[in-house]
Image (cartoon, rainbow, N blue to C red):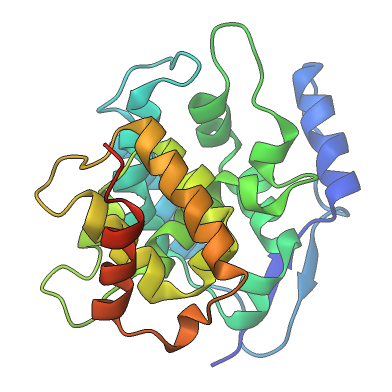
Amino acid sequence: MEHRYFAIAPDKARWVVDQRRLGGDPDLTNLVECRGQGVDYQECAVDDLRSRLLELKNDYSSELKKSDPEGGRFESEACVLVHRLLPVTNSAVADPGFWIWLAVVKLPDIVEWRHGGEGRFAELANYGIGNRTENLMFRMWLRAEIVYDPSADDPYYLSRFGDQDLWRSHIIRQGYSSVRDVAKCLISFQYGDGKPRLSSDGIRELAKRLRRLRANMMMEFLTPARIMGVLEDQAKDLS
C-alpha cells in the first residue's frame, strides 16, 4: 500500500543544519513537504524508531572518536531496527528528500553523535545533503535491505557482520552490490566462520577485482554457488 511521506529539500535542510550550529532553533513548518499519495505517513513509527535507537545508543560511549569501531558496531545493530521499524514504500525509498527529512528533522542528534564528536560536526553528507548514499539512515536501511534473507531464522544475520569500511567502501558504493546474491556471498565469504577471512588490504583488493569482473560478467545470472566459486578464485592469492 502506498502512503504519503515527509521530505525536505537539500538546500532547506542545509539551512536548518547551519542555523542549529549557530545556536538557533529554526521553524520547520514551511520547510517540510508532504509527498506521494495514499494513507497518511505513520510518523508514530518513526518516533518509536527514535526511542529504540536512543536506547541502543546508551550502550555505547557518549562521544565517538573519528573512525571509532564502536560506531561500526552501533550500525551493525541499528540497521536492523531501521529496516524493521521504518515504514517505507518504493516512492519514499527512491526520494532522497525523505531520508534527509529523517536525518535532519527526526534524528539529527543520532547523526551528530555517530559522525561528529571531538569538537567537530558531522559532515553534511551524513545527513544526505549532497550525497544520498552517505545519509546515515539510508545507509543503515540499505545495509539490511541488500542482504535481507526471509528464509533464514534470523533474516538479518548477514547484516550484522562486517565493519563500516566493508559496508561503505566495498558494498554500498559498488555497482556489483546491486546484485544481492553477490553482496550476500561476499559477506558469507568474508565472515563464514564469524571472523574476517581476509585482511583489510585483502578485501580491498578483492573488491577491485570484482569491479573489473563486473565490466565483463553478467553477475545477475550467476547462482550463489557460482558466485562463491568466483570469490574463491579471485581471492586465492590474497590473505
